Length: 113
Length: 113
Image 1: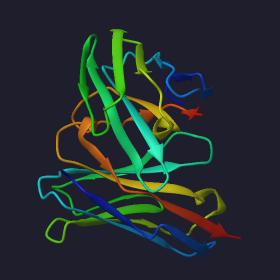
Image 2 (image 1 turned 135 degrees about the vertical axis):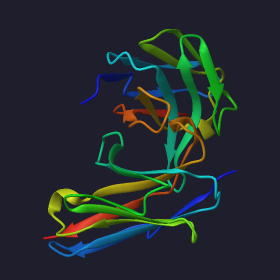
Image 3 (image 1 turned 30 degrees about the vertical axis):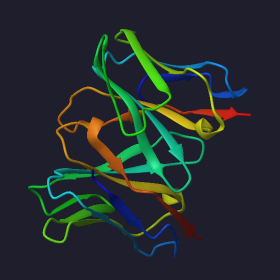
């Protein structure tokens, strides 16, 4: 089955700097790659996603890039703010729906004021 | 926030007892999912439902059963709880199978002693 590896497991950056979280996947059939943000005591929330027919997608300070050849995708957060502190999960789907989502193990991002 | 309510939010139970967790949605979404979240493992799919009385197994379904008799309710049952089922359980819903955004509930922290 699909295997998703996520790095780093923890990341601390100064407020205003950029943060990058990387994921690799094993199944070349994967075609949907969402990123979730989980704040303490809450459920994960989708922040951005990308499909395999697109190489990059941006939404304000957040961007995701996908390299299908290398089978990796990354989350980029620019101009980080204290409210960006959370656990971030990447995921990959080999099917057409969320039932086949395989999650990474998460990255705890801390923004240092 | 999407209308998802998980109950109970916290539960302590003894090994060998049956436990039922409830997920209730007010969004009339077709798809519902149960995940468990454990340190070092991210989120893993237990079971999912694609309609009333239509369910299927996920990655870690052993020891769990589900039922969906109404669109709005998805029940997860641990027939005989074990310590390895101590975890945080999340319910999620989505309205479309083709990679639509999944909305997560607040989670249920279950401790089996």
